[in-house]
Image (cartoon, rainbow over all chains, first blue to last red):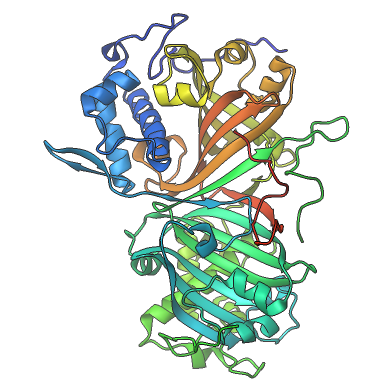
Length: 289
Length: 289
């Protein structure tokens, strides 16, 4: 075990320094206007914890008062105010002077472990409906054709759907489908059904696997308007290529989810392989494509 | 199989409509200034495909000319220009008039399937080093204590690290550690080692599993300054609670990753269970905590 001293750029200081003692110091000990970056860090710490409490439904609504939160987190009221301002800017909470702070918006969990359509995922939360903005046959760009293993010039089916939970726009999905399956999907009820369910019904086989890439991007002006989100707000962009059980790629999707509405969740398992701690998913050789 | 007609809000039109024919239409057929939303959609389609090509290293650098891209995607040059503007705003490409368009920045893949530290993940891409901004003992807020199964008032160890790949800040990590393991980690070289590796060395057991939540948020002014990212740029926020093999939670992290630098990747598998298509991760009962 190495025992290099830790090079502390900043002296020991946190939301609640205990320095060997388990007794809380008073919030005032920690507040230090001269260290604006450290105060910003404390606000972020408070915001991170509150954010998770709000998402998990463990946060009282309305929220505790500033004074109560300052005591709970052992930080200054200024740090609490900053933390609440961050969460308000993210659209998670609203604040009414002299009334209090309330949870403005729940987020919905989307499971990253499983291959599941949005309707299936949000079952129990409300009705998922799709506004179908485009549903056409087209010759996709070569990079898309390549992912779907199409011949050059072969057509695909392209869908564009704005997906609501009740009246809440959650995601804007661009979908390219293999032509044989896509042609039949054009005849289906795209307003209320998940594409995954339709693919399984049409192909007569289950989905096998998918490759997923997740990014954070800022909403361009058109995506923002479509999703009824503020311009420049953060979106989760998922690119997902889905294969049938027989290994054929059939469905390439670009999904823009509102960052203030969706949390992606996953469980990870660490497994040993050989001499090295090589790390792998829940099993070995599960990677698709 | 349902056979409802598809309610097309917009008539069939896409980046490259084929309408039953596999022959590409000319780009000019598709361009239509009057349909500004549809043009924006086309720009987004082009940007989505180019983005993935850039990330996967399959995009030539410099990029093809506007005219070449317009032909490849069968869209107007205006749509190409809009698409390139979106990618430039995301910091992915740079454009020099009369010289061309080049890839400004690679993104790095972070595997969502596995429980792996950043240094381990980016092995082969360069040196990961950590600027240690805080490393202290403190009494964590109740919500954090609860996640780590600590007694009320029990102290934890808190770390704040800014993590670089070479000279590139990639992520800002706030970490709360169980007190016994955390105390020993304070004596280790936090500048170059992954916390995961240190936990395994100190505890003498491997990590077991983790629960992960992924969100997209906009960078607040302080996070942006610390990560040297533009204010308001999109960040991936990961909350990860990691358990030892024996099931004890020991490490709660809030990780802010630059959205323009990191792509999270995952492979999903669909499995059947009982009569219903219940969907589960790579195995059954793998969920932790």
